Length: 189
Image (tube, rainbow, N blue to C red; front, top):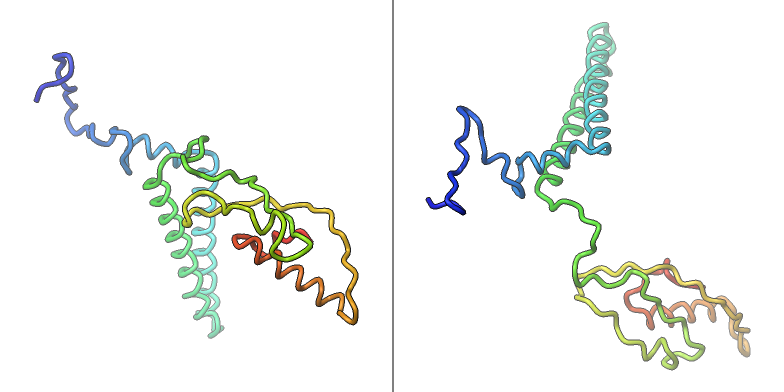
């Protein structure tokens, strides 16, 4: 196999795996470095402490059950199950981290801006900026994160014989209709 510029490929030492140093693959040294960040070291330590603690509690329940406490037999089985669950979650997170792309500071291309304003509610339904606002750009699968909108709210007096709560609820429904991608928590009122 020809090599660039006529150089020979490095000859691996006996028992040395050069493929594990190939960047971009799970299980490589570059990918494993992601598991030694301060956050991951804390996760590793927490996993070990929890597993050892849960196993110790299971052993303690076995000694109580052997002394005649029949309820402790259930706890003696339960604590190792908790320890196994911690190991399962830890292993799943490790696999997820190794299979994922390394974190970058740049947002992916095509990401809509997160500070796109939500149009305020017009006084009359079907008119104003809220009714004529263009839908946000981007694919329908792309979640849009919006900042809460602070709008000075003018009180609308209830009309002849109308309930003030009913008027407010109708304003809320009109706003939701004018902002189809908005969540109820985004309501400025």
